Image 1 (cartoon, rainbow, N blue to C red):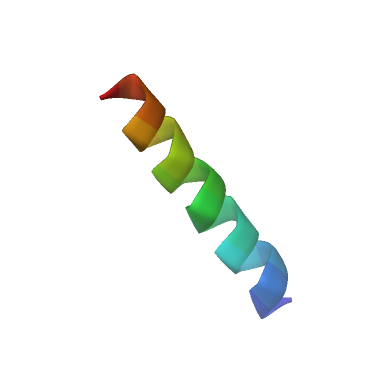
Image 2: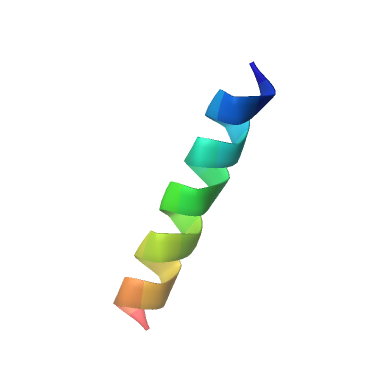
Length: 20
């Protein structure tokens, strides 16, 4: 369950990085 949460955060971080 935590793994899925981490994946979501990682995806958000990647999106932020890409947006920047």
